[in-house]
Amino acid sequence: MSGGLRRANPVYSFVAPCVAGGLWLVAVLAGLGVGAVTIAPSEVLAVVARIVGLSLAPVAPVQETVLLDIRAPRVMLGIAVGAALAAAGGALQGLFRNPLADPGLIGVSTGAALAAATAIVAGEGLIAALPWLTRGLLIPLAAFAGGLAATWVVYRIARRDGHTDVATLLLAGVAINAIAGAGIGLLIFVSNDQELRDLNFWTLGSLGGATWSRLLPALPFMIAPALGLTLFARRLDALLLGEVEAGHLGFAVERSKRWIVGLAALAVGGAVALAGVIGFIGLVVPHLVRLTLGARHGRVLPYSLVLGSALLIAADLVARTVVLPAELPVGIVTSCIGGPFFLWLLMRRRGLGMG
Image (cartoon, rainbow, N blue to C red; front, side):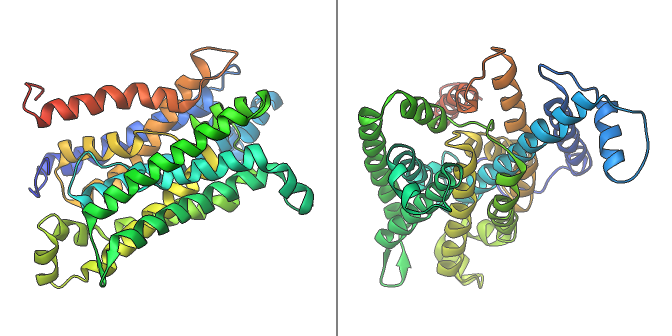
């Protein structure tokens, strides 16, 4: 894999955290402050200070309401989703020993998308039968369940005689992606105009529906698995050498693969449940970290968490400001970044003079 397991340059050990933290802070402040209502960084800090009981400069009620009720949950959702997708991508790239791997490869994203699309088109009957179930709750629950179900099917196909074959896992993921894509296409064909608009916006990803009531119960399902993946850094380093070699080093290879796939599925399923399908974050961010700091997952995964959050917040900022007063799906912005980057990676791997 690119970068090898070399030691990081001592300069990087000091500079990299500062750069990553600075980029994250700039992205968060921009996400909170930029938009139809401008909120200066000093006003953001004043609102935060008031929440913790300190008194700084007064802030206009309109700006405080916009900050706390609209932008703060949106930025928090971007932090959680970006971290979940980037951490899952970094872990799966290490597991598959392929820098072009992406969380969508194992079918979790399209499985979640198919379940959510089904809920959008055919959920009225279920809502009528279960009065406690609202449309706002049905779609995230369906997406989360669909992502986990797709991952379970892929994993069961790849598992044989107590062994999980990574190549079969990938091929099964490709098949699930094709089946789910066909199902989504059928649902788009039979949907009405309102359902079609919902489907198009949701399948392209958006942070626009973020509210504290939806976000807070779902945060553990994204943040906990993403952080949990960082605990497998040494095992992923060992797997880069090969499964047999990792076993000789004393690691429980099969158990590690189950945990890594399961945690990645949880993280991505939670992200898709709240934000829809957002592509390329899990591909671009871990690979950039690996190119810069080497392939040790003790660096790749933590930096991916931070920079994945920053990149998604920045992409969402572009999505909601570039065509004001309308809003682009954030998946379009990430695809505009990720598509050319993916082509560059392919050309670089084929030795076509791209670095």
